[in-house]
Length: 320
Ligand code: ADP
Image 1: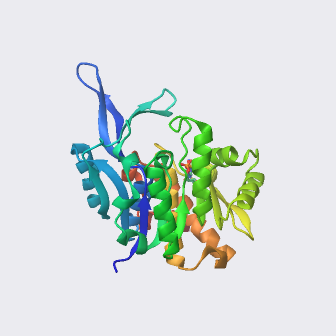
Image 2: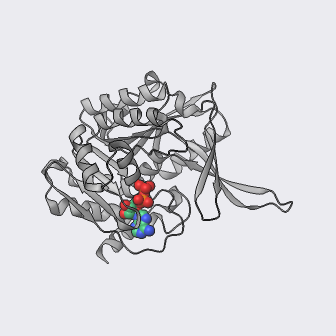
Image 3: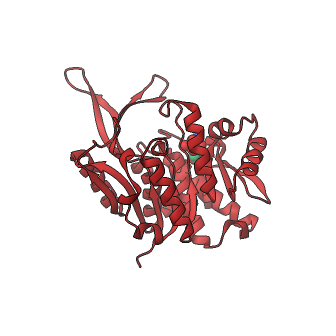
């Protein structure tokens, strides 16, 4: 059977990002592929890994644009489902005066949230070494149930499960619902990547180490990664914890930094090819260094997929 280094499932949408002003003074928007799970696969594909995506788009020009994006990035698109019953999800990104981003979503509901388990190509669940998930599609049906069933099936068939909740408080509306969705994800995951904001929201703790300890007590996670922006990242396993500093860069756009980090970490996971609990502290630190560099480099260029680094760049930054 065909095997993949990594398969991911989740949201997939069009991001319209501000791109100047028309001669008549109207804002212009640039069309880009959006969605964290695909960004992670694009990072892995750029690092030479064999990847495939599972998701749903509308049978409309935007859905076909997203399919072209997968193909251009070398991500297998056989798990991409087209529907005539919902439109491709779209988001308009607004940049505030301080550079902060806000989103306006067109989702009623969007096609990516309409994915049902029966629509998933079963060969993608049996042939994955790493199965990655997590996004807003965990908060509505049928995509929530489809995602969890796919994760369980991939796990039963030997995949390592990686999870990034990608919680965006402004988009996920009600917090109780968001927490429930994240807890369901945490029950299934071997490796989890969260921001400090997500960690504190999930545990109620107000310190990094305390929050990490609580999360590891509550869920069967084998490795917890917490991204700390310019400060790098923190890790905790059942037997060790520590911090890994990032690298000095000149950020221009932090979009997809977390996805560049996660993609580079999964690359290291695949290269090591041994369960994380067996890793030495040195191997863990090396993987974190690679991941930090993948995240740092993604901040030095504009855009999401366009900003992701290749192997040579990451290695150069890590070796200094
Ligand atoms: P997210 O909140 O999306 O998970 P972060 O902004 O924390 O992402 O960035 C992810 C990773 O990228 C960080 O853990 C770090 O390794 C790297 N990174 C992000 N911003 C910077 C920066 N300004 N300088 C150096 N590294 C950075």
